Amino acid sequence: MIQITIIGSGNVAQHLIKAFTANKIIEIKQVFSRKKEALLHLIDSEKIITNFNELQPADLYIISVSDNAIREVSEQIPFNNQFVVHTSGTSSIEFLDPKNRRGVFYPLQTFSKNKNIDFSIVPFCLEAENTADFKILETVAKSVSTAVYSISSEQRKALHVAAVFVSNFTNHLYQMGHEICEENQLPFAILKPLIQETADKINTLDPIDAQTGPAIRHDSNTINAHLAFLQNENKKNIYKILTQSIQHNGKKL
Amino acid sequence: MIQITIIGSGNVAQHLIKAFTANKIIEIKQVFSRKKEALLHLIDSEKIITNFNELQPADLYIISVSDNAIREVSEQIPFNNQFVVHTSGTSSIEFLDPKNRRGVFYPLQTFSKNKNIDFSIVPFCLEAENTADFKILETVAKSVSTAVYSISSEQRKALHVAAVFVSNFTNHLYQMGHEICEENQLPFAILKPLIQETADKINTLDPIDAQTGPAIRHDSNTINAHLAFLQNENKKNIYKILTQSIQHNGKKL
Image (cartoon, rainbow over all chains, first blue to last red; front, side, top):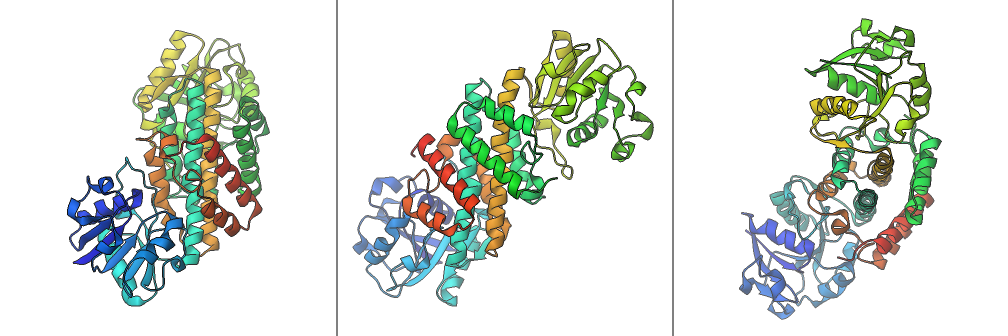
């Protein structure tokens, strides 16, 4: 059994607790949370600690806190030469206090409180300072997922930027579609098959080959009609900029 | 049997031909294509016509051509008082020549040449000038899909704008993610589960409640690191504008 202690109680920490609880090769040793109540629905009360001095030995400490707290939390661990990783897409491995052996255990997925995740397809991006520690991370990651990658801090930064484009920004475009539907008494459900198909398509086509719509067709009549329809300045601006970007960077089919 | 003649040979026309060919209540009477070769892989040669004078009687004529050709094509039909519809998301029903009974048969989906479509979930947005004609469209649509809606020309215009946001623009964000991966020797496959989950999430959460990432967290350290990472001015600009839009129009979780 690999004994793991999780430090943090946010979305990622909670999803990891769920994934590890059902896992045969992992034992959750302890979980650190500033507020004990935050995790009582997930794990036995006696495993939840609220003070770093209560930390016991474990094979792996996973710090899953907001980026700007990683450094401070890693400094508060009252041990040396233990294996300590964070789960951040943005932070370098260097953010961790060098008094311990360092690594990164980054699950590349969007985690929401109210939606379960199928961890078996979540890509895990791993980094460690030595091969033995990398092996530990690899064993843990492979016990929950089939998609495990070795990714450097530099690559991880690029990946996180790419993830913001394809996930956070995409979801905001969904929000805009939702608003346009509501304003025009249309059910948002009518757009869902289109959203699904757009996401599915890139499994068989590169995005540049999957591009459709008035922008890539340089259909200026439709584009002008859409701009005239959009009263909201922010939506109009985003429509213009993304249309230009498609026309300058896309491939005419 | 409902006899249908399709005018056009583009993506939508070809997908409709495929859907109708496998259909028990529909007979494809004829298909008009400027070039006969374009459709020989889909339908018998003798059903393909290249001259409007060869058009025979049918219950329904579906014009599936580019928006700016709809009016001219509808004028070239050498009949009066027949039922003629177009398949456009943008064009008003008024674009059709009023010498015939008019309607709209708009399948709200993104059609690519090299990818099959599951028509059973494609929303069909229908409009007609009288109830009897609407019933014909409804029968045809329900024979291929379970998602059939009555949508006015005004609503359809709004829907098409919303579709551009959630599909065309979203795909362009996928392209940007793809480019960032390529530039950093990362497999694009690593982003696919995230893209899928982002699209799945809105089946259980409204997009505004599903928003995650540095913008909605107002995590300026990460945002600044991402902007510093992005060398491409276009990507940097889109990153800024969408981040601002999320912060002004989103809901802090």
